[in-house]
Length: 582
Picture 1: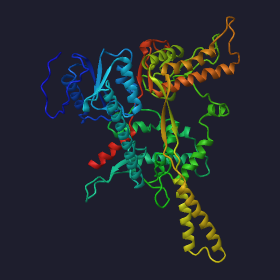
Picture 2 (picture 1 turned 135 degrees about the horizontal axis):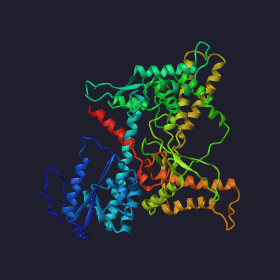
Picture 3 (picture 1 turned 45 degrees about the horizontal axis):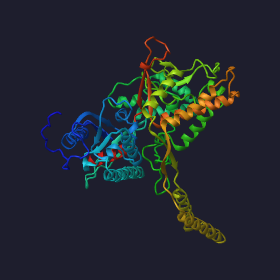
Picture 4 (picture 1 turned 120 degrees about the vertical axis):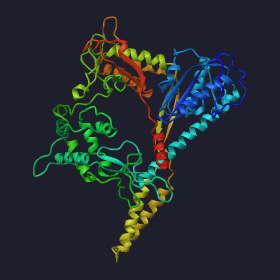
């Protein structure tokens, strides 16, 4: 065993005695998780140092690896984390006997994930511990304290979410920018500090004059003028590309002092900018509703580039104008619900865009469509990408095998969102109607025989308000249910549908003779696989083939990784703390 390094100052050390169940020379990994990482942050170094000290001083073992996950929320499943998931697989990078983290919340901020991790460690014969409190879940008392700590960690996560959401709601009501990505056409301006308290007054959105002019000109062209018919969004996209106008993503790079990539405008991007509420100077809450002030009018967060009425007119024109002649020809043709089990999982390694499955629709002797491939559409959209393609069937088989190898033994859970019940909007509307009625009465509109009508309306609104205020409300919640099945069982259950759609008898006849039923079976199975890959945030990147233009399958072309998962609640809270510190 390596010699123990001298103790360093300003590092907290555990004063608890060594665990009785530990044996000298055990191999440990130190796990470090950070919700948000910055260049100035020392949290990774601090967690690493304390974890190493615990292994050497308390467990009398050796550290075989330090596993770091940064910019990862504690709400994310341990099996969905890029670094930790490799050590929870049947074939970890190195053999080890146990793993330790600073606190229970470093493992998970959800009781269900922490309990699953404890069960996995028990089944695999791995030890798991924490530096602070020195909780040892291998004992009955340790499991009890670990469960309590996990519940506190989950409660702390909910408190962070509530505080961040309340702060953002307050900023919206005051017409201040709550943080996040600045919309196209706007710039973020700091309001300074309060002269009395010294606290930050927050941020507001100002105009970027050139980009505001781009939006205004585009909208005017679509509206048309002087009796001339307006253009279409597709025509405006072509004009912007011809003129070399930087796109939204390139503008962000330019503002950050980086080199733009020269991406092309797309119709979807332009429509999103034109119909964005911030383009009309208003902002929406977390439910997508326009934020209104005490006077019932929308809260202005910036100068309107387009009015809400103009946005409504644009929306009508855009919906009435198909994207192209191809779309007009397909307007009555129903779109397929699913286009492959890897539609939202397979990405191009060159440009990072999604790949889509297409090819021949003719069924072969096995009942499956031949010549299928996954292709990158970036090149056809004018983007700088060679257009990486790969044959579909072997890729789908390889991803399924790799997915089961990594996650097959995990228990399959289902999340069910239970919507809340809230009558706040109805109460606000009734109060506004009552205030308007009383204002008309004070203005003398209701006189003579109209007084009886006023009394009836006032009584009806008052009774409605009392009824609405007395109705029970319920907060929205997400319930995680353990199905009792493993991921492998659930995956194979969907795979049986695909196999049944291809199954033939000894005579070569389909067991399911109806072509539409075979198609439905296959799509149900592929949709199930697709949903499972998305649930675990699987991301497969396809590299270019050695031979230009080749679609051949080679496992070396595939990179199995995970989609990055942001922590918006923590990001919002960090923005608030940053403003308070200015």
